[in-house]
Length: 225
Image (cartoon, rainbow, N blue to C red; front, top):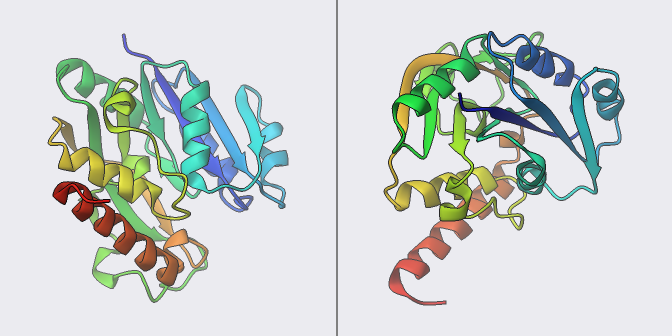
């Protein structure tokens, strides 16, 4: 049976991190390990993680979520790597369903599932959140919805640490442009909690980085620097 390591990047996440870890530990097939990579937090998040038995906590200077995910990849021992953002929740069958699908589809380099968007308790809808997505359950190419074979990172590369917000977007774009096979799981396995502190709220940085990624991709396709 394939084993799964779960990697959680953490930065200023004391509000949500305990619940995120609880959702990982309550899986009907628990992961081989839960690795939390603290990316230079100054709040109580790392202390909360350190108080939870069985969770691996490593700390680094603030370098962004891409660097934190890469550190988790380096430390992970599982055949498969799943990722969970600090403010998301896994439903109890999530890791089991990813494993089952990837064992059934050995050609698939990763699996991707649906997520549900909901406002975090006490939050109003942020301006950047499309209202029609609240309550929606959609296939989501976001880290929390992916489970990736270890060898896939050798094919596609790792997360781009020069991107502070969109390293996941860049990696997924690269994966899809290569035309590699993947498996969709038509089930909602992740709950995404929308709140004003989400990285998506930094619209200016996100837009700048996405334009840079698109230009880099276009230049690569033309064979220019």
